[in-house]
Length: 358
Ligand SMILES: C[S@@+](CC[C@H](N)C(=O)[O-])C[C@H]1O[C@@H](n2cnc3c(N)ncnc32)[C@H](O)[C@@H]1O
Image (cartoon, rainbow, N blue to C red):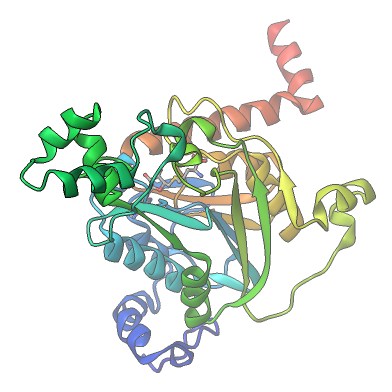
């Protein structure tokens, strides 16, 4: 392999480490025309299946990856493994996205995860203090009775031994003394770096304002942190000619969301069949904005099939990749249902069915 891929993908533009990582994948693929089928959901690891997609064939890849928040499907990953997955998936996109096409990554801007290495947050939660005993009271009692232990000091002051401990050490630790602390990590920079290293350029970003997760947020009352109520859509561009067609949306749609940086629509409220679906509005808008009818849209973390159903509804082709067999079945079901819905809404289908029924 000479580094220049048959369809214009130039391996030599990438960093030496990425070249090393990708060389065997694309060497294997050279001359191979047995690509992943379109309008299908494929079961497997995105890292292995993406190199089997036809080079320069994807107008838009839109997906939401595992967020490293302890869901069942990511339980096997540590933070390094999670980064390797996302970086590996992004780098494998560059050869398959069309020149002028897009990669759109929906992700919460912060990751929140348990980190045993993080120092404990010494939260002194004023509203939770039940005893009026102050630190000064404790210190004074200890000076007067240097031979007293913590229990005796507590008895003397008429409070609990934990209160004495808290007043002295301020260690009212969120989540308990033995639990690891909750670490917050901003991920936009990581995602951008991986995309730039792969050869993409940052094109745009939108904010999706979702339902505020009050009920999940103990830290709304135990810290100064904000509740989780928005996510990002980071959009990356592969150099090439990009058609700009303002007729893709109506004038009202351009005004309401096409040209707007903030998109507001509710989260999926019934996650009964999949733990982390995004609302159909998210891939639908992205598809309508960035592609034409007949284009191919990819989602390599397909989950329940939301992107595939949106693509069908918008008259686009799709390729879906999903690791979990149950989710693959769910996504295939979503594809069948959406195809039927579309068929039922076409006048010819209605006429034919009437004729069959008669
Ligand atoms: C955030 S969910 C996507 C949900 C999807 N947008 C929906 O609306 O249903 C991430 C999905 O990625 C899948 N996944 C995790 N690791 C994967 C991998 N290495 N390759 C392919 N899919 C993977 C998970 O099983 C999960 O369904």
